[in-house]
Length: 194
Image (cartoon, rainbow, N blue to C red):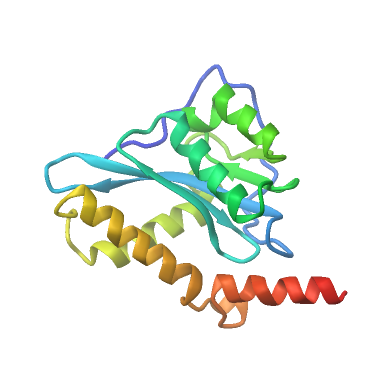
């Protein structure tokens, strides 16, 4: 097991704006993110950083690398911004207190992308349960009981295929049995009509 959350004791406090309410009235209001490890056959790991939109359950941004440096989470956040047309426009981004999310570099990326930061309590995974649950589902459904992927290429391809299916085809009861992408199309047409 790999420890992906290493708290940064000197980090400036950030309030918990989510308070375990993992819902949002519409897409691009509130997101959660986390880092999880992807075990590879030769004993190494890849690391996946995610940005999950709570309004549509869409994985709006993600990044895979062979390291857990801050650029991993910044890349995932920037990917989410590209999905949203270049800015997250005031959305709240909630994470744990890992050093990557507490870094000055991540703070600057949030400011540049118009994101309001939110973090849970140190050592309490329930404060980021939506992100933790997403990661657990991804690993359970891609590894299918295997302890690891044969190689990094297999892991990357499998995760990419799963994310594509998750966003475009997987139905969610909370979304009226629609996929995240289809829900966003419907939510967008409703918002435009209003």
